[in-house]
Image (cartoon, rainbow, N blue to C red; front, side, top):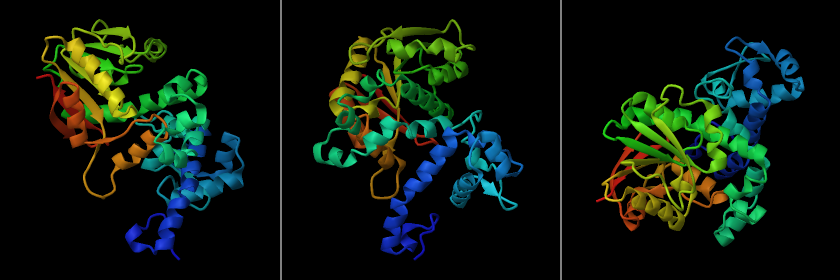
Length: 345
C-alpha cells in the first residue's frame, strides 16, 4: 500500500490513512531533534555533504543522513547531489537567526512537560481536565515556576511566533484611532513594540506577571519607542491597567475556559470605566464545517495543557456578551490569527 506523506487522504486506502497519521510522530521528532541540535544553522543554500554537517554539529553522520532524507521527502531541506543537503524555504525557518524562525517553537514542543502532558490525552477525554494538571497536579503557568529552563523555552517560542503573526496583524489592523493601548499578557513586548513603531502617536502599556515582565527590558523591543511605553505588572484576573481606550491580547483568551476567559474580559470592562473602549483579541477562529482548519489542531493543543479552547465566531460573540461587550468584527490575516474586535456599548 502507498503511505506517501504527501498523498491526500482521499487518494489513500483506509489503512494507509491511519498508518500515515500514526507515523506522524517520526516527522515531529525528526524536526524537533534537528531544531534542538541547531542543524539548520550549519546548512546554507549551497549543498553540504552530510559528513561535514555532522562534524560541525557533533552528530552521527549516518543517523543524521537518515533524518535529513526523511525531512527532504516531506518538503524540509533539499538534497542534491546525493548525501549533500541545502536549505529550502521551509528549512530556513529552523535557523536561529531567521526573521520568522520557528526553531524556538520546535524546541519547546519537544520539552518533557509537553510530551508528558500529551501522553495524558486519553485521560483528558475521560475527565475534561487538561494534561498538565493530570500529569503534574497544577496548571501549566504554575508549573513553570518549577521548571524555569523549560519555561524560558516557552517564552522564547511565544516571542518568535509573535514576530510572524504581528506582521500579518499590522497589515490589516488600524491602531491610529486609539490614544493608549494596553497589551495584557504581552510577555516581553514583541507585539506592542511593533504596533508602537508603526503608529507613532500611540502610547502603550505592557502588562504581565512580574516574573515575565522582568525580562522585557533585556529583550530590547522598545528601543524605537522609548517614552511612549509604560510597564505594569499584575494578574489580569484581578485587574488591568486603567486609562486606556483599547486593550489587546494575543493568544491569551484561548488559554482559558469560558469562566476564566470571562473573568479577564470583566477585568477589562471594569478598567474602562465610562470609556467606550475596544477589546482586540488576536486569536484563531474555528471555521464551520469539517474542512481541515488549523484552529481545530490548536484546539487540541489547548486541551492538552492550558485547559483552554479555540472558539468559533458564535462562541466569541457569546463570551463577549456575558462580559458586557459586543462583537463588532472579525478580520482574517494571512496567518492563522484573526483580529477579533469588540466594543463596550
